Image 1 (cartoon, rainbow, N blue to C red):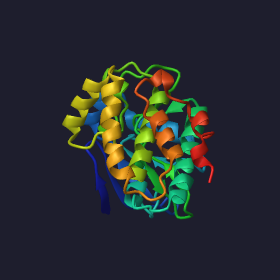
Image 2 (image 1 turned 90 degrees about the vertical axis):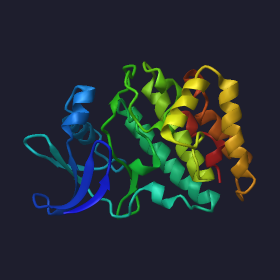
Image 3 (image 1 turned 180 degrees about the horizontal axis):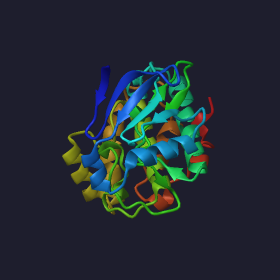
Image 4 (image 1 turned 180 degrees about the vertical axis):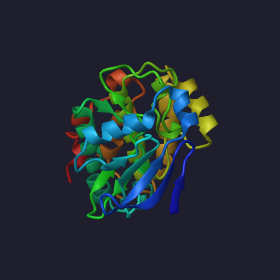
Amino acid sequence: MEILNNREFEQESTANNLINSRVGTIKLNNTTYFKKIGKNSLLQEYTIIKSLQSEYTITALNLSQDEKTMILEYCSKGDLSNHLRLTQIEDIIFIFKEMCEIIEYVHSKGYCHLDIKLDNFVISDNNKIKLIDFGHAQKSKYKIKHQLGTIIYNSPERVLGNYDGIKADVFSLGVCLMMMLCGFPPFPGSEEKMRQKIILFNGNPDLYWNSVHDHMAKTYKNFNGLDEEATKLLELLLTEDPEKRPCISEVLQHDFFVI
């Protein structure tokens, strides 16, 4: 069994799924992590993935009887974090539109993902982008209280808890777009430094945006083809106030996607 990735709370490995005669990815439950959030997250994740089953999301093939192992579809072409060196704005527009359509689908089914990042968009064998890792996903009709996720992709309000998961997902998409365009997130640095910055900037949008613009400006001047619409969309997605952040259907109507 070949280990593919080691994560803080989960391990994934390639294995032959004999039941389905397909190559799959095994996701192993870690009981220490699930004690932290007080639920069997692997069973919950399996249930969510099955309910969302479509061309947009990873396929869950099987769950063991003890609910400690889940077998997922294996996408051999890796995730989008391995494909950051896109030089053509047209390529970025095409891929980011697919990402937005995937999240629009998830939101339309009543869920927010809450861990949107380039690593969680994988490329299937037929070159379709699919969303993976629904371990933090929640019903979108409820306010979200936990602060889990990946800190560099988290919106400022997530530090305080009791936030709108839909709007938090939109912010995370903005970080994805910034990394695709610029190569770094709004707050580069260690996770602890980023957490401190987010706490500092929460409720202080001027200070927040001064920091974001400083980082954006450093790369924009070196990026051929980045236009005004890309800048406008980034500002919308990364709006500090979640009430002013657009929903995903509004994002897809933006002129950035007009080539």
